[in-house]
Length: 556
Image (spheres, rainbow, N blue to C red):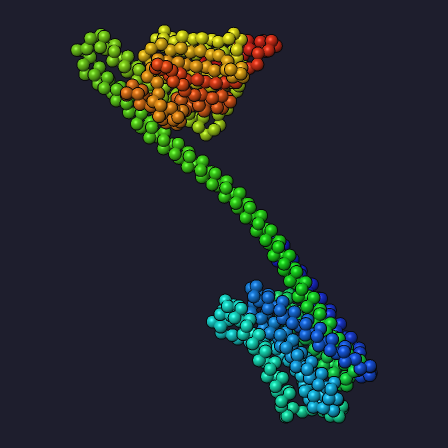
């Protein structure tokens, strides 16, 4: 069975939290019980120490309430808001308790402040906080779904209501304790009363019952809420010490307040540690999200590139189909017309007419074959995977092979200038032959006059320029920049045919061999197509290799 490492880590962390808080809670209660026999030992009066207790206790509880409130606003459950309200109640109640304590210092131990108001506020502090913690979980559970949903969707408003409720409760408790005359005295002339002992016992019982209620639901609480057990244990310890030593400025008196203060600090430290851990987990999650986002971006870019390639391939396929559909129609129409003429009028045609018809059929078949050859080569070259096998090619041999592959009629019109002896280019022999053959074939088709093929070095001597010059009508000036584009073709008074494959293919093959092709006008009329290829440096020791390549050139 597969185990989620994150869930395992979460369970381990929660287990360590529960162990830690139980160890502390049991330690607090054990130390309290151990100190109970000596709790009534009188010590020196230190009112400033008690004032410091008020400030530190209120500050710790206020920070705890704030952290819990921030947890709720960040998305925690509604019970976290209730727990924050309980800590807020403790913080706010410390204010009137501190004021009453100051009045006790001025009025003495026999005043109402010392016998009624101060003790009751302290009991409502150590007993009221656990009761609120235990009660809020039941109140939250019993809220109508619509009201709890509204609180979770409008969290800031819910936080404001919780603060106002805690403030109103503290005001009501303070008003009842300070203004009511029916509350029994906890002390009478400095001596604890029976009613006071019953009140302390009731507060201790309320804290114990609240602790049991919280422990029952502890497993279902997040770690940030579980540490409240420590605070309730401190309230119980304070109640025990109050019963054991009800007098002020005894060992029990000081230990009770120190226990409350340390417990508040421990809870605050635990919340800060939990917040820091949450921040680390959020940072790690943010880094994971960043990595995932970068990976998704990379994959999106890859998919976009693939989509562009697919769109280009689709456009390429559409262009081929559209162009072939249009261009193949003309030779097929001619073939169909001559075939019908020969079939139906064979007996009435002269030998010359029959020969002319057959020659026309052959010309159109050659045109289709030429178109098919260019299309096949172009389909192989278009995706950008033109594989070249460059070797040192003697220019004289390259031009001789091209001339030998021409028809008898074409050779009669073509003159060749082989250029400087020993000149060679570094290129693929098949690609070089294809480009030059295409230039010469176009010149034979579209020029009625002579055609001149030559080779020579450029002005620097780094490249060899192959030129094919004819005496035709040239290319319209506005079309020259598109001459080597895919599926483009100039209309020269209807004399030109073809699908526009050849020159585009020539450009691709030249560029694959680190060369270039271009067109030049010839004055007064005519066209010149140029193939530029890298020149092989002329060194004496390269002569044998040139001859070897010359012998190994394929017959194209």
